[in-house]
Length: 554
Image (cartoon, rainbow, N blue to C red; front, top):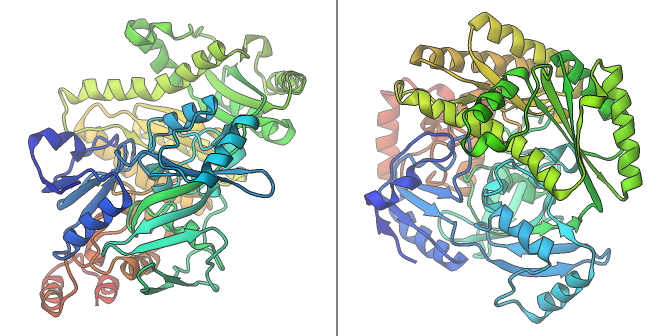
């Protein structure tokens, strides 16, 4: 592994799925933790900014570099070992560049590559072959995501309704700091004392951290650093957007795969009916893994995509009477249990005003794949539509929200979206995780004026969702795109507390430049006396250097 100067062959690494584009001077592709440590030691001497990347499937521009070095971990994709605890649960150690779809293939085939494993891990691998099939439950829409990237933004996805987000399933990790030192964290081994956290690196350095004082919302949340009284140190790293260190190893808790997985697509004429069915399903259904929603505009997007032919010609036909869709995934121990829930769901659909006879039930692997294609075709079709519009309006991008609210505010937030979109006259399509009160409302601008209007509407939503006790980012992380929303949610002083936390891990602010917090809060290079003087003089002339910023950077 070596650091390479930038050239056009690397230009694809300047963007992620947010469609934002950055710049960088160098790049490296480590294959092992020691490669990472060697690279960051070299970069640390000059306090070079470092942007960590995986598969670049993120939607918040967290992997888009703002100068400096790109550390791409996609070649760190090995499985490292396996263990089993006294309850017969399996725990798999992986490098951060392993792709989720590959992990799923390994687990389904019970054939995990075991090159270089020790004898104990090989023995547990033999036990895994005899055990029921295992799965890793975190389920983002994009299965080409890397596990390290999923940890960095606390990814979740459709099945978070049942299984929660990535954080709940990480039991240990290794974190390389900006100076090349390492933190090895095992769940349960290091906890905060109230809001004070003390850590010791493998090199013997002590890191004393004052955790921010803000309270996390009672809603699905990937907004900034996770903090709580007496929290586990592992939880701080998950969702930190590459700003504290570089994850070089993860230990994942596996679980037995369900015996039966069925999918049911329920169609309604009106959105209120789908919302009512969602509330009823949460109360009365017993084996639900996911509750997903597609609004009328999302179904129209699919109809247009199907009519154009090409890859989307295989989509099922959507009759005009299908106004919107509630997709329910059931995971049960037997077909009898699953059928009981299908019948129960049918009654709930009828009570909400829908037609249970119009529902699609997918029981076979082929049918389930058809419904999965249906679900994934919506964002793909929207992206294609925006790419087409960018040919004449290159400044626009898709604007996708990622906000969530507590259960009691589902109807309120849906009414907010509908009324404000109608008032603004903006085209949109919404889909997502209605079971967690978490819809991705996508504004589809046609002009740069509509693009600016949509961004302003998102700011309004951020204020309203915060007032409901919700989160401005439920699963995509904050990255660079939602940085301003974070201040709306927590306040200026909380962002300053986050900056102090970051500087305890990364004193020169090299890692994840631009993610989570404004750069004005952080030093732009090393913290030498010469730099302090230069920084202070620059800050004195910088209107963005608020009193809080000056306090953090002092």
